Image: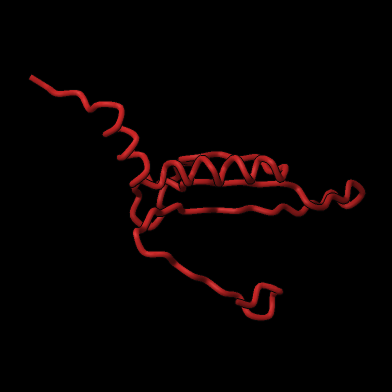
Length: 97
């Protein structure tokens, strides 16, 4: 006999995973005009195994038809849910903390 989880247990499991963060990151990147994929699978060429990127987003940022050149912005995000906060700083990029 299998016991199905109740709705509260399902919500708790979602909050403990990175899934809700993935969806929020994807929503915010789409709002910025990027094309977004979640749970994007690719083959690890070193090990020949399937891997997954939580959020992948891309947008063209420059285009020269005459020279058939283009530039793209690509964001690859791994979303994790930790009980302890992580803090990152980037000096010299206008993001000093």
